[in-house]
Image (cartoon, rainbow, N blue to C red; front, top):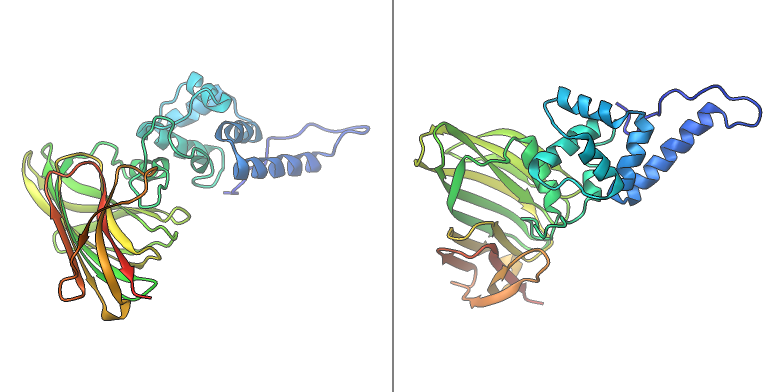
Length: 317
């Protein structure tokens, strides 16, 4: 499938009219430009025009793939009156990109930050639109479990901070038959870490957005009965340019334990517990953590407030 579509057949030309081949090239060039620059509604309108489909036909094509979007919604999207933000509409947007012969994420990237004030679960403010998009591709818009607590053990080398993190998430089934949990990973430098399942689960489907540094992975286990708890374990290996690590908590009341072990080559001078409410806010130092034996920092807390909780460290010059 071509990343940018050729428009439908162009009528015959005569006299001083522009040749059909030139019209095609001009339309494709114009579409490429608007997909790079946006805004979203202009790019969507241009892509629909280039594909030569009516809004009625688009809704039919979407319905054929099990996605229901009204003609009025499509009209509002392409006029800038509204835009897709909910998980189900973001899934529809992904299918729409396929129907319009666009590359995955061409339209989603133009959405930017949601207008409703919902922000991402990532260390650098990557739009939650893209994270929800990956979750929707894994049918994870309605979680079957509630996260009770997270335990992480991070090993950090010297700059640029090669690391390995072992994660253990304790979940409780909110309904019987639950047999999976979807986890998200974000790398601020756009690289994708290696994700592996641990002892208590196996790796299922994986979806990535390399440009945004996002990975969504399905971890399989169970099935569980309603109310049953289960430890989900997985591992990540990678490298980060930032001197901090932590986890986003969407809901209040969860528990978190983070242990960071530093290689002597990292030459760490101090470590600090940090917190931020959302991606618009800077990290705040909550307290300085003692470097136990000069190379280990640890935090544990219960009934957390929502937001990003973690540890940052300072390297000796």
